[in-house]
Length: 106
Image (cartoon, rainbow, N blue to C red; front, side, top):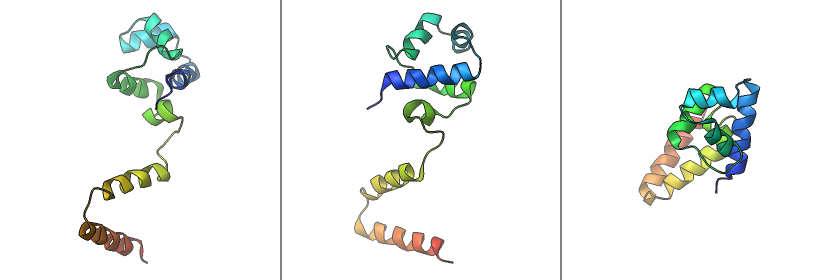
């Protein structure tokens, strides 16, 4: 579950690091200053479009705002791969295993 207070705090921290005022940030996003204040306090949340725009303006990946990481970790990627593997039949999983082994052998 996403903690909107933490997301808002990270947005505020990234904005202040870039020395962008709430007024300027609101203008850049095409929203009101009050809305930015509500987002930064965790009362409201950005939609995906505004989150992506914030990523570009504040030069931080979306993962930073959501979970505080600057980049996706290997653990995150492994979890995603496992979820995909769970949907496959045994034969495909064996093929993928052999492919991974061949890619990692030296």
